[in-house]
Image 1 (tube, rainbow, N blue to C red):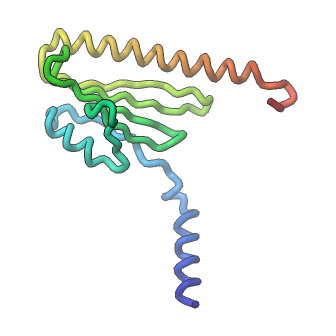
Image 2 (image 1 turned 90 degrees about the horizontal axis):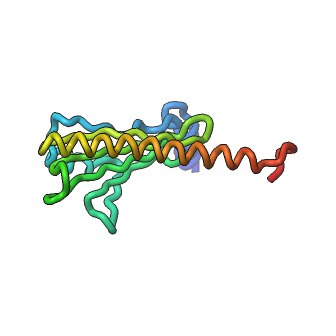
Image 3 (image 1 turned 90 degrees about the vertical axis):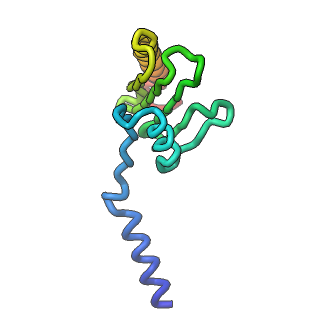
Length: 146
C-alpha cells in the first residue's frame, strides 16, 4: 500500500511539472540531409502519422498548439525530388498561421515555382483562419454568451 502511494504521488508530481507542461517543438527540415534521409527521418518523428489516402504525407501535431504536414513529391511531379514542410501554429489570437519550408533537389526552376505556390497558399490559409476567428468574435454576444 505504501509503495502504491509513493508511486501515485510521484506520478502526480511529474504530471504537474512545468517542464512536462511545455509543448514539444515542431519538427523542422534540414535540407542538407537529402530527400531519402528526410523521408526516413519523418517516419520516425514522435507521433508521426502517414496519411492513408496519400502515403507521401506525414503529419505530426501538438493539438491546439501546432500541426506539421510533411509532403514528399513523387516521380513525375514538378520539382521532384522535393519536400514541403507546412507548419500551422496557433497564435494567442486564435488564428492559425501557416508557414512552409521547402527542400528541392531537382529542377530549380520547377522548385522555385513550387516555393511560390506554397507561400501563396500559406497566405491564403492564414487569411482564412483570421477571417474565421473574426467571424466568431462578431457572432459572440456583447454579454459574453453564445
